[in-house]
Amino acid sequence: MARLIIGSGIDTYIADLNRLLADEEEICKRSIYEGAKIVADKVRSEIDGLPVREYDKSTRMVNGITASQKAGLQAGLGIATMRRDGSFLNAKIGMDGYNSTRTEKFPNGQPNALIARSLESGTSFRSRNAFITRATNASRSAAEQAMKTQMDKEIQQRIH
Image 1: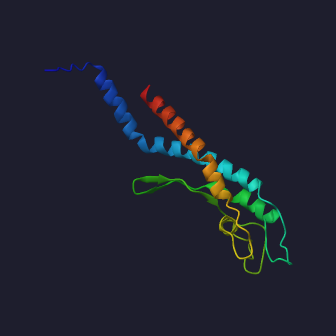
Image 2: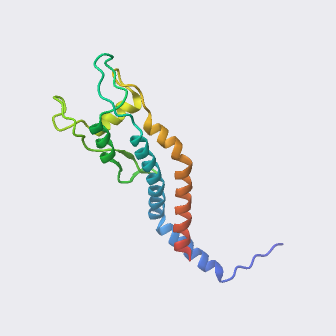
Image 3: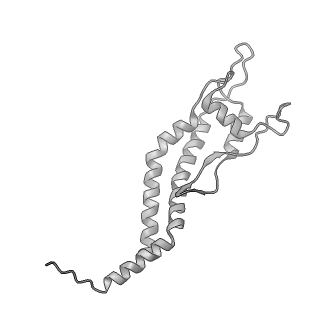
């Protein structure tokens, strides 16, 4: 019959695990934000690459966005406060606020989220330019690696 003898090291190991369990949510949040920063930076670079064009009255199509709309997207880009959704922690990256393009319908300026959605999906007058999808797909593996690295770093800080 096999016999297992556990020395005093098990008490230290259990204490380390309890410390990790107590800080579980903080460790996860810091790790998720590290990944979100990478995705947000990639979205910001995709916004930089968006074409700036004015409305073409002859074709009634817009192939890009105006300079003020682009500036509004850059200024409004951010990472929202993390939320718990059941057993998941979610960090959302998106647009907030208004740009300086004032219209009759939007006297305070056009909502940045509206401009971003119209670019991402396209409209009857705007060609589709899925800059957010491109950014998230391109930065997925780098964000996952950053989250893993941050998680390992946080665990090592608490164990030793």
